[in-house]
Image (cartoon, rainbow, N blue to C red; front, side):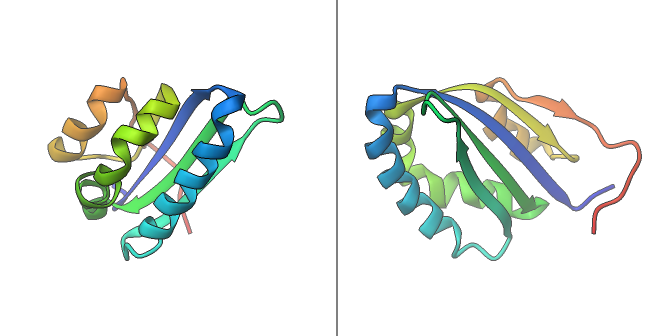
Length: 117
């Protein structure tokens, strides 16, 4: 069982809101970079700025802190600029992590083979 949790969020956004979204993301990324248990935290966007992804990887015990402490101050502005249209979770999240991700319609993918370096 992996001690890491990975999330792939899919977001829809209005291209007119992208400058405000980009500025907000810069703040969120800076705050997330201070979390020792956050291993990957990357945003990508398509060419017409209508779909964005967030690729996250955490030590399993860092997800709750990220959501409750780091992301919480930005959540209202963030959700005012984008709509979360998908969330795929990789790993074996515990009940506390699931409680925070379930409201986003999380699809949980359970590991059954492979490795990570």
